[in-house]
Figure 1 (cartoon, rainbow, N blue to C red):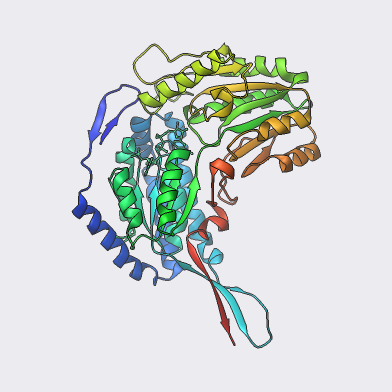
Figure 2 (tube, helix red, strand yellow):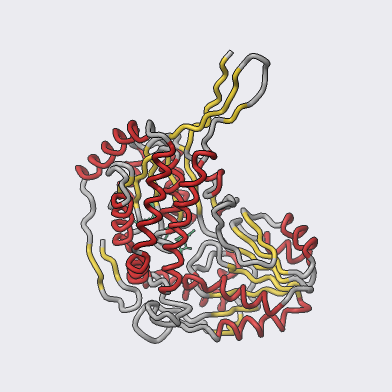
Amino acid sequence: MQTIDPTTEAQIDAFDRHDEGAVEDRLERASRGFETWRERPVTDREALLAGVSDVLEANEAEYAQLMTAEMGKPINQARAEVRKCARVCEYYAENAGTFLQDERVGIEPGAKTFVAYEPLGPVLAVMPWNYPFWQVFRFAAPALAAGNVCLLKHAPNVQGCADAIADIFEAAGFPEYAFQTLRVGDETVAEVIADDRVRAVTLTGSVAAGRAVASEAGAQLKKTVLELGGSDPFVVLDDADVDSAAAVGCQSRTYNSGQSCIAAKRFVVHTDVYDEFVDRLRAEMAGLTVGDPTDEETDVGPMARADLRDDLHDQVERSVAAGATVELGGEPLDRDGFFYQPTILTDVPTDAPAAAEELFGPVAAVFEVDSEAAAIDLANDTDYGLGATVWTNDRERGEAVAREIDAGCVFVNEFVTSHLELPFGGIKNSGYGRELSGEGIREFVNRKSVWVS
Ligand code: NDP
């Protein structure tokens, strides 16, 4: 497995896959270790997680540089990602015990009835490259706090990040078995899922990857959590603050160079403010600094891999062939690296790729609608259901529209992002299950009902 710097196209490193023996060692270590780990008091596990937060904070610059080198994230966003990982570790260090406390349920006088939350065992995590630290910590912090142990199969292009994360847990004092990486291909993932020692699977990535992994886990009757893509609507109603909407919309569409599952992707704009919004969005997106992601001033870096850039351009070209108009950009950048111009498409037919597929790069598709009802219909006209945004100066109206949108989260007049305290996940093709908050830590546990008469 090679890691390639997407800015320079130069190889950074090469890694050998783990052979059968190495995979077997890791599975056995995880399985045996789990029996010890599950017996440790939750306060011990919390204290270790607090230590992980310290290691992350102490080495923020190093980890940020690694992410930026391997997948091209702008450096200030990479540092923010490391800090968010530190916060999720702190959050579960402070709250895991409360989330996992036995819950008393009064049913019959004289009987003690309660729900206990017990770990499942080794959990396999199949993870993507777009937030190479955050996606892993978002899963691992609650899973470890709950008493599970983790096996990480990371994306091939971020293997340096995978190793760095394993080193972080070790440096914080976690036993070696608690968090291990598996450097394997998809065929071996299927074998690992089928192994009795692995008790559950989580995946963040594309719909195709989710279907494949969930099918394999389903055949083995193993629990899965899937966090897949999105084609999030960004609804701008006739009474919206258009300047704020355009500024936040631009940020949402282009953060992480547009490679985010909860980015605003389809801008659904009321006809009364449509022209003004397109003008403001064009000004915002044209004003972005695209370039070297190690530069503090850069807003948009390269896409993580050449094939991702090429696929995105293919989606843009097919959308234009179907009738879309290019308002801005529309081409890869003519320079080294896998850069794509910030792009705006209008007049997009609803069956064109920019409407019907996920666009995982800095390309905004803007649609014009003539009523609130039409906005809601178009917002929901997607196979996905991850996040959504509504812009209006009327909070009650915003809340009412939020309730009509089919998505795992809806933010009114606010940038959509994950918050530690809120469940995060999707419906429809965006997946199922929830991460973060108390809901997240209870995904990979046995909710055991106990009745003592
Ligand atoms: P993938 O979904 O293919 O990759 C994500 C992870 O899943 C990787 O570790 C990958 O490993 C693994 N994976 C993929 N297929 C299988 C399989 N059959 N069995 C086991 N593991 C599998 O994403 P890509 O990198 O190819 O990106 C393609 C598109 O996916 C993007 O353009 C975007 O639309 C979407 N995506 C969404 C993300 C999100 O945050 N929701 C994150 C990343 C991508 P390997 O590469 O070794 O197959």
